[in-house]
Figure 1 (cartoon, helix red, strand yellow):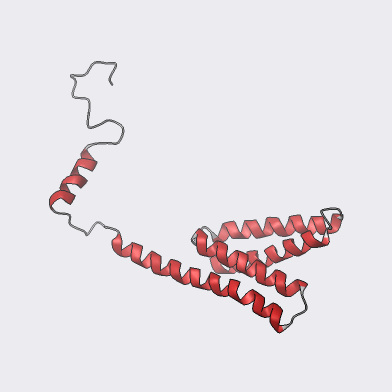
Figure 2: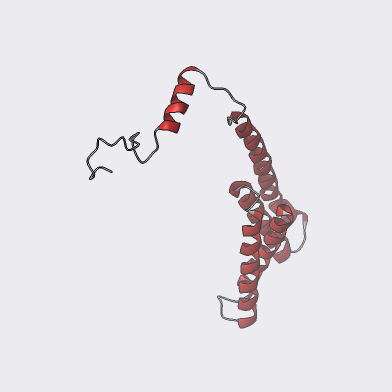
Length: 149
């Protein structure tokens, strides 16, 4: 669902870029209205996609689709114009694959409940649990002045 929202957001990005061009500097009302509607739809769908996707690859795909769409919608469909859009789409695809590899590596580095810590790592984890970040380890032993509590 996130990828569908992202692809649709990329198409609306193309729409708002084309409408911006057609508005002649935001002087013509109908293209300005089209620009505003396409921009709202594009950013809204991008926001929906970012609930599940990482920002880097999602942004790269969104701008890649927008760039490819703008190139192909404003120029005659010729091999050079199609080739001009290809690197942006390929780069976005590679970023997505790199992000997947990074997420997989991150999963392997995280310690879960089934991980047993020993030695200094166990001592550090115990110390972190005992000593809260805001109290410096003082749990109100009763020997402090009221001003310190």
